[in-house]
Image (cartoon, rainbow, N blue to C red; front, top):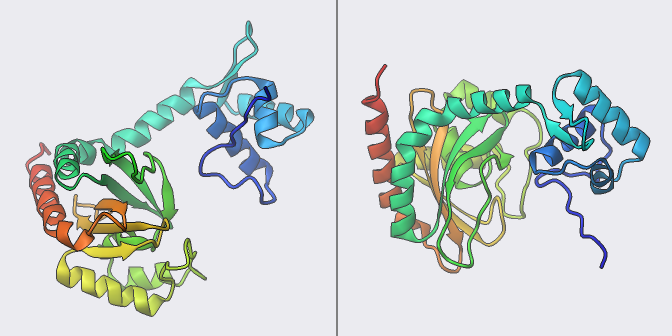
Length: 260
């Protein structure tokens, strides 16, 4: 039986890549648990010489280490420390949000995510998945365009007009699905509606077949949103909006009470 190989999740390896991009793909593979030189090259479609050169550069940079006995490759302790520091920056908000996320998942029976805007992307920092067999599950660390879907709109409500103008003027916005809204005027109108209503709703704008409701969450930095997402043929986001808003209010109260 031929061995099945799977490329790194969330990375497009079909486009022309720089050495930096190729090195990042190797780091993703190592993070997924791949350690063998032969598998790394096959998974990424790199020649042995290219794979060897990239791994050597990563070792020289202190990002990768090689076991002298097995010759396997691993992420270095410096990378692991960096990862831990990044995760710790979200930890206070995550700890405050998780009990409410679990309660909201139990109430709606759908996936609940805590998202943060990071530059021109929005990233899932916590996720509680639906108990249904058919569900949408993205995973912590999944990212998508900053403007798309209910989550994008909820996150943008935190920004001032000049900040919105700067972000939306960065060039053509990515259209992740045929229903993704990419016109700045339409996005501005949706932001205004979300500020008025306290939530945003979308259908299939990040992933086809989804329905979502998202509420901005103010932790003092204005970077988070709480989202409930499920299949559009089962989940009715409007009906869940009040529950998500109430969950956000409790999270914000908990954050205000945290020690300085």
